[in-house]
Image (cartoon, rainbow over the protein chains, first blue to last red):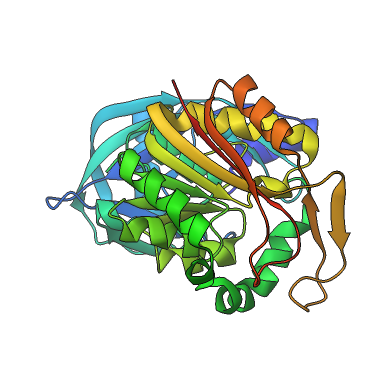
Length: 156
Length: 205
């Protein structure tokens, strides 16, 4: 997740101290049931579209914004698949920043645009069949998220 | 894994390890029997903990089970993906699997890479992810203390492992809520390093 101005400001104040941040994740599915994932440049790993909610932004606006930014698509949001938090959603970044995400996960369908990476945060965007998700190239955070919404490796 | 360097050590030797061990079960009849018995008695999927390049899980898969490989080494997970139904990178003390989500679990020479005090945390995780009635078979080297080496498969990368007692593995399994079905010790096969081999088969009630 690229660092938003609001979080950068908080980091100036609190350093690497643990922050608990509301965030969103978006799982677009197509007619064949495939899932749209993005490859994150910093880590080289596949991840679910998502990020922190900006100040005064509603969760569904944040979800639509992240889909647009990270994957180049406009989405219509479907049901909420889960509201997740817990130790498996805590991240320690390479610079030492500690963040515990509480994430609202939305189902979605793509209504416009064509999947393309932004070249800044994401290097690839691709549809995956459920039985071919690239689990071997995902972070513990992404694996925990997919498991929690029933798309983990033991679910199919 | 308890020794942080093990991830990069296994990454470094991944292809060499694969070449050396991919057919190891050909020469290990008792290991094949235990894996066949597990594959017959459990439902899908089976998690292969510390799967390496997936040679153990692949044998379970040949018995008809769906197998998910789990390893802390990203390079090993990539190799395992080619042999198993899925592979992922995770720590055995924090498995990215839901409670009661796997029918069986194999952990061959996986807990050896935990420090002694961390064994319980891994077994608690095995218990959590197994379905009631699900089974686990794990193996280790017998002994006391730890082995620390500054090379691994003739490569200049550090290696470390904990040696366990059979009673210790059985006791820890019980404490994690697993019911031990069998515990055994065998002499090493000619192709193996010269340690006595320990096996524990257990069931989640």
